[in-house]
Image (cartoon, rainbow, N blue to C red; front, side):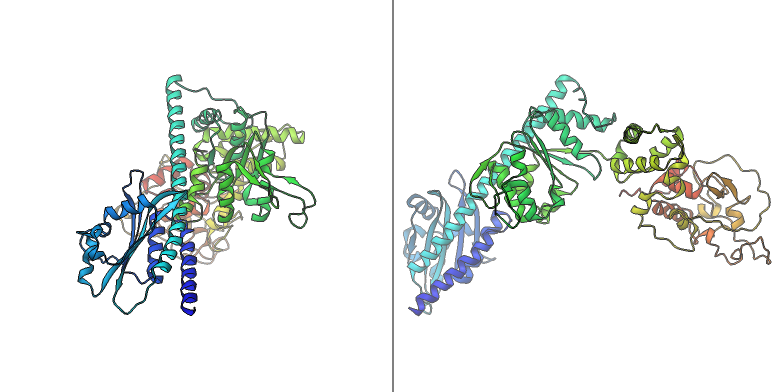
Length: 624
C-alpha cells in the first residue's frame, strides 16, 4: 500500500510539472522537448520520445530525451515505422518486454539493447485528441535486476501525459491554421488594394471631417482606409503619440457600411485590469462591490458598429487571453454572469508601441498580435508632412477664434517659424502651441515674437532636453533654458569689413590640418560688441557660420570698469567651454532638442547655414 501511494504521489507531481510546461507561450517543439525531459526525471527510462505526425502520417515533430550525442543516425531511427503504424492503427497502448527478441524492432537502432546489461523493454501509447491519433509517446527501459517496475502504473502515467500533450497539439494546430488564414486574408486585401489602385490609376482622396492635410503621406493613408473601410477586417493603427489615431479610426467607421451604427472607443491604458474587464464586457448586478445594477460593456454598446481599442499594447498578459477569445469567437460573458452573449463588432486597435519587440520579449501574445494585425496602417509623424503645418495651424486658430469669439490671424514670419520647428509631440504639440500663443497674444495678429520658442521658452525644448538642466557657467545653456544672459565684454576695435556670408562655418588653417584649435577671445568671438535685436542684446559672430575657433586667446588686460573680469583667464561665461566647431554645433543642437531653427538662433546663424554645417561635419540628426 505504501509503495502504491508513493507511486501515485510521484505520478501526480509529474503531471503537475508537465502541465506547467504545456501552458508556456513558446513553440510547440520546445514544449514537447520539455515534457520528455521532465518525464526522464520521474521515470527510470533509457530513451523517451514524442512523435507528432502530419496529415500524411509522416513524422512532423520529434522530441527526445536520453539520446546520446555521439550516437549514429537520428533519434527517430530507434523507433521503427511499424511500431508507429501499429500505435496509430489500433489507438491502444503497446508493451514489448524485450525489444531484442521482438520482430517489430529487428534491424532498428533501438535493438541495440543486446549490448546492454539487461533486457530493454518498450512502452508506447498513442497521442489522441477528439478520437483522432496525432502521434505517439514512447519510452525504453533497461531491466538490470536492481529496479522494480510495474507496466500498469507506467502505462497509466503515460496515458495521462499523452492526453495533455494531445490537447496542447490540437490547440497549437488550431492557432497555426487561424494565423495562416489571417495572413492569407491580409495578403488578399493588399493584393486587392494594389490591383484597384493600378486599375483606377489613383483612388480619389476621400474627404473626411477632422483630418487636415494635403501632403502625400496623408493622401496615401486616406486612400488606404477608403478601401479597407469596405470590409470588416480588423485594422491596427500604428504611429507616434499625437498623430491622430482616433481621428483616422473615426474616418474608417464613417467610410464603412457601419457608419449608421455606434462608434465606441476605449483607452485601454487609462483603466486598471479589473475595471477594464467590466468596461469591455459589462457586469451583472451584484458581481462586485458597487455593482448596483446590470451594465452593458463596450462590446455590447458597439454591436453592429465599430469599437476602437486605443493603447492596445498596454494591456496585461492575463487580459490578453480574455480579449483573444472575444476576437476569435465573437462571444463573451458579463462579469459575474453565466449567459454567453454574441456580438457583431468591427474592431480597430491603435498603439504607439513596438508590438513586434513586445512579442519577442514575451510581453504580448503572438496569437493576439496576428489577430489584431490583419491590416496595419502606419500614420506619418508631423515631421514627415511639413507641408501640412500651415493648414493645421490655421485650422487650430480658426477653432480657437470660434470658441473664444476672437478674430486672430497669424503673420507670415510666425508661420515660417512654425514650419522650422521639429514638433516631437506631432499634431497634438502643434495644437498646444497655437492655443497657448493665441491665448497670450496682445494684438489681433500673431507675430513671430509671440511664440515661446522665439524667446527660448519653448516647452518642447525643455521637455526633450532634460527638463531645463543648465550649467551655470555656460551662456548657451542659459539661453537654451530661457534665461537672459548679458555678458559685459571688453571693448573691441571696429571690425574689419566682413566678407559675404558663407553657407558653412569658416575653416581655419589649424582646423584644415586637424590640429587642436584654441577658442576665440571675447573680442574675437563678438566683434563690434553687442547689437540690440528684437529680444535684447545679441552678439554677431565673426563669420556667419558657427563661431570660428581659429583666433588666439586675448592677453590679460588691466583692470577697467568696461572689461569683463574673466577676460584674462579664459573663463568668461559668455564664451562657454573650450570646444571645437563640431563640438559647439553638437552642443547647441542637444540643448535645443535637435531643432535646427532654435540651434541657429543660439549660434547666431541661419537655419540654412546650420543645415550645411551638419552635413559638412557629418552630424547625424537625432529623432525623439
